[in-house]
Length: 477
Image (cartoon, rainbow, N blue to C red):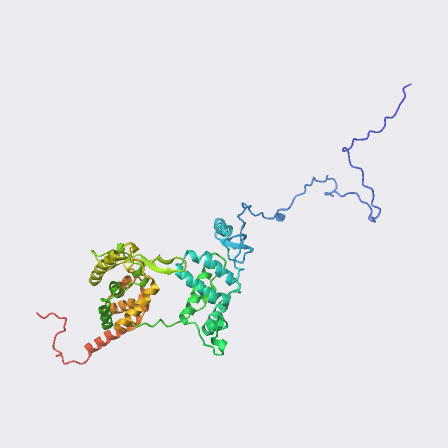
C-alpha cells in the first residue's frame, strides 16, 4: 500500500513573489476598502494607465548658455535680455542687465561688460549713484575719447559741481526736475560757500561778508553739457531708457564780448611787431587767424614757402601728465591747408635766417625740435609764458590790451568788412560748421547789413540827377 505524504508548502526565496500585506494601522478608524479600478463600467476591463503630464503643465526651459555668458532670454516685448555679475563702481559685485534686438547683440554687450570687469575696470549700473557713475565714465570712457585738456576740465567740473550737487542720487531715479533744480542752485549759490573755501581761509562768510561769487551762465551751461554727455553714454549702453538731462532747457547766455582790432589798430600792431623777435608769428596770427596752439605747434615741414601754403596738423598744448605735447587739432575741420599771404612768406623767410643764426650761437646747447617758433635755445614756446610775453609786447608798443585770441577775431572781422564770403572765412579759421562762424560774427554781419541798407537808402534818396538820364548800367550807343 502506497503511503501518501504531503509535501511541505514551497516558500519563495527572498525578493520573489508578492509582498506580504501591511499590518493594519491600529490608530486608523477608517475601514479598509479594496482598491478601486480606473474603469467602473460593467463588462469592461480596466484600462492600463500610465503616469503622464498634461501638456499645459510643461514649463518652457531656457536655452543653456556657456559658462561665463550669464543668463540670456527673450522678453515678452521681443527684445533679448542678458544678465550677469560684474564689478561695480563702488567695488562690490552687482548684477547688470543689458538688452539687444537679437540674442547675439545682448550676449556681446554683456560679454563686453564682463571683460571690462575682469580687467579690473568698474562697470556702472543704473543702481549706481551719480557720483559713482561719473567716476566710472571719466576713467573708463571719456579718457579714451577726449583730449587730455578737455578731460581735465571735465574732471574739475565733476569734482567741483556735479558730485557735490547730485552725487548721492541714484542714476535710475534721476529726473529732469532734479537736474533743473540743481542748475538753478548753481546759478544762485555763492561758490565760496558751496565749495567750503571760506572755511579754509578768512574770506567770504568766514568774515561775515558773503562775496556772492556765482558761476557765470557759460559755466553753468558747461556743467549741464558734461552731465548730458555722461548720461548719453548710459542710454547707449541701455542702462537708461532716456537722457533726462536733455529734457532740461539749456541756459541762454550772452556770447562773450570781444573788441577786435580796427583796420587802423591792426596796421599799428603790424608796425610794432616788426621790431619784435617773434614778428613772423604776430603777422601770421593777424593775417591768417591761426589759433595760438596751432602757431606754436607749426613745424617747418608743414610750410611750403615756394608755393605759399601751410598745412595745419598739430597743436602745441601743455597737459597735466605730458607737459608740452603735440596734440591733434581741435576738430577734424581744424586740420586744413591754407594759403599764405605774400607778407607772411617774406616774414617767415627772415625768421628762418634768424633761427639759423640763433642755432649757430647756441652751439651744443641748441635743442632741435623742428618747430618754426622756438626759444633762442630751440625749445618749444610754453603757451602760458607766450601769453605773458604778448601782454608785455602790447604794453611796450602802447597798444590796447587784448587777448591773443582776439587777433583771430580781428582777422575774421576785417575779412567780413572787406566783403569776403562767409564760407571762405569758415575754411580759413577751421570751423567745423559755417553756423559757428555765422553765430560768432553775427554782430559784424548785422553792422554790414545796416551799412548796405544805408547805402541803398542814399541811392534811392532825392538827388539832382536829370530824370531823363539813362541808368548807370545802361549801354548808350
